[in-house]
Length: 258
Image (cartoon, rainbow, N blue to C red; front, side, top):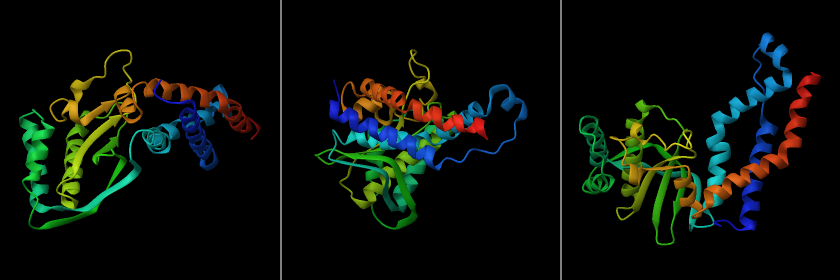
């Protein structure tokens, strides 16, 4: 078992608090859909609208705080919406672009080699950037840093080049702050929509180094909380849902009274 009873209770509280906060601040979309409303009822239409809104913000409103709560059991430092920095060596930024450009016609990513290449270009003029913000930052007791960009379960294939550039730029910015940084920058996908089939990694192959730049579902959550954390986390979500069900039903029932 990855998580203790106390840790599970803490994570369930994070989940419940996040959802209650979403209810508190949620304003239903005022889309006039007379046929749908008469067929399904105002409460179900309100629930549908809420689900659409929740799915859009699930990463920031649910996954980020839950990931942070889980990671605190294992890592020395944990932070969401972490600011890496706001400047990068000009020649390092050019190196990032050169790596990405090369991968478009020579799709053989090698993160270790790419980071070594960036480390060769850490001098001279610096370029000012908009502060680079990371969804989840964790650091081990030995100072090894991991920066995660949380993505939807089915990212668009056309976005992978942008993802790669972002990961390399984060590393370049971190090296600009501290040349001896022990940096790992990764894409995290919270669940596998193809379960029980394997995740379709082929869509990212050629741009991302799958072993060093991508963690999906169990691989992501177990990394943060230890082996078995993913299964325990699913149980936490289920128990939170059961606990909140009367509140959820009561919240949406009021729409039928309007």
